[in-house]
Image (cartoon, rainbow, N blue to C red; front, top):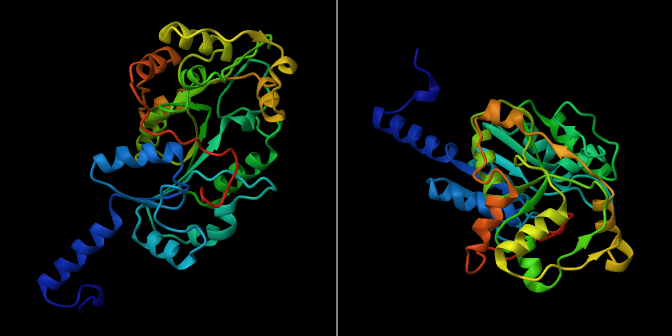
Length: 306
């Protein structure tokens, strides 16, 4: 009995199979082509991948349902970098969650935040640490919703992001860097290139939650001081939060302290950061004559990010 899936001449069958392979292999669709997603897209395109997406650097309007569904049909991998809306709720899940749950592709990823751990008073947190005790209730809800969406989902929790055009070196040059009196405050960070590397490593790794961070949590003051040393730029004065007139969001940042452990990503995904501490990352940035990407990703979802 002839299988209807393979009816037709051998050449026609082979042509259909090659077309299917081309459509399904090596095509990442990104919801939210912001700062870090652009770096990931550049790295993948250099490896021969197709990358499409929504957002400021994308070619598809988030609100164009037909175009998004058509792009998803061609993709083998899907990633969302869109944060929850200010009023709560995940825009991607709210609009396309049902389609993603039934999408037949190989890999689904979500860039979450290590902010879901809240204030750990400087202690180390790994993926087994409780979440939901901090100021980011909307992010916690989105993180959990993505985990519950589908067994294929990889949730990558990101700490403070820095890179070309988005670092303390740029702030020193602009005169906007701060050194704040914040006793025992420490946090983790990651170079944007290492986010791309870890995400690509996660393509071949098992589903689950992964922290991403470099090997040396440090205070923001230590990072500013290292950047000033490398560039020869003057150090900003040491100020209180009131003297620096910090915004409520910035004050919230300094109110939390945690060290993010990313050993699981190293063990399970085989990922190794190219910039294991902020020192190597800042050194590379200080050697650059001009940034390659100068836009800053907004902290909450907006129409251009989707």
